Length: 100
Image (cartoon, rainbow, N blue to C red; front, side, top):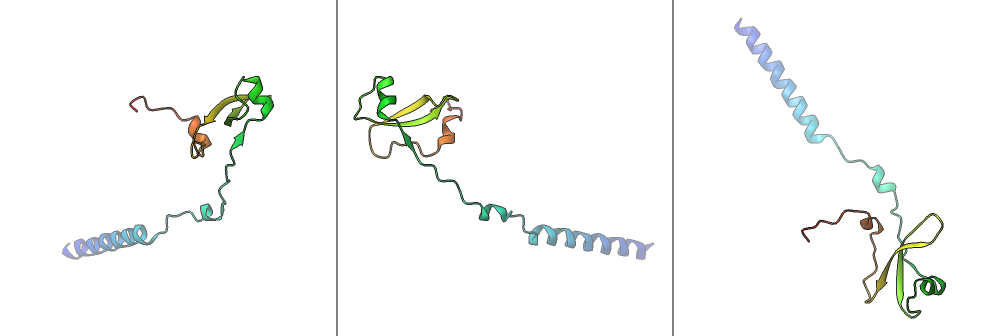
């Protein structure tokens, strides 16, 4: 009876060691993301015709953020200073936190 407890305890201890070593040494990282080159977002600006259709000044710099299926501008941003350009285009569709 005492030998059975020792054998069961040794098997459980060995199983615990194998399980812990598996979690410690297993590489969870997915190396596929290293091979993917991120797509560079190039800002698009309104043409003179588009500015005229919105009655905007021709000398202003206006970034196009969204277009509809017909290619017409639906969302734009007036660039007042250098660095005002939207870089993360997906941020437009994220909900805004009302606390800020």
